[in-house]
Image 1 (cartoon, rainbow, N blue to C red):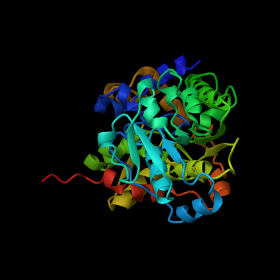
Image 2: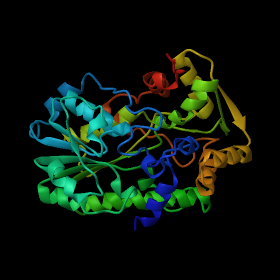
Image 3: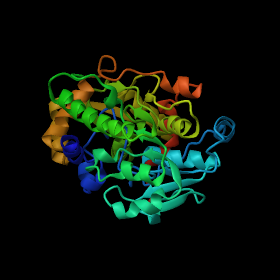
Length: 369
């Protein structure tokens, strides 16, 4: 069931950079995953090894007041060094909860000292026992998108896990046929199949579950970092195209609420930003964050496609990237903004300008000494 989507993921370098280590090639891919929102579970992003941690100062009091019965139970965070996973770890630590972070590279994790960092790989069952020992709740990275299921969910339940919070994708909730019959529709159908497949696997295991379905992450803008650092101009098609991109810390807020309270059991939350932010507006916000004028130079779609192919993209990926952007020139295409974050957290999502400020260091020219 997951094979076609897994292959699609491997074709897209920003889905999982470990499947394509050539950094020059990865620069060409515009979106981590259409309507998805995750990067490789051992690389925080292509440009920077550790995304800034953004923690709500109110998290500790909220967590202790609303969910006390599991306060001393270890929570396992898989995908702990990804954009969202890193934020989940930080928020759980600030909430005073025992947290174990699973990663394939513990020695380079750069996670909080109070988090227990352990070796764990979804493709290596021999690493699971130590990761799952004493765990009752799991923040589950969408491993089935990157590889076939080797039985991690079943093994976790056998080890005593009673709750999963699944990092899924907005695409899991799309109706069949979303995106049309062309390249974009086929891509979204593959994503829907993969992410919904993992959701169903969890739903059928007998444990409590919550699905957190991010739309496009604001972190996709990191694909422009090299262009901005070296030339202060971003080149691409459809300057007016944009989606209600979401700050990774907002996704983590919702995930942590589902881990620490009973309010979200059996619920699927699609999390987006509050409004569309066009590519041109994103570039302007990044320029404001770093204090320089950055402009967006619009390319003809055919010209952009040629450039992406030259940079290492395959034709299929280039085609759905073009289609994804074209779909959101007038409006937000397949992904309108949701009010999920406001309903769950009681406040508005972070803006793209906030994200740009949080990541300003990623876009500033590097000073050589």
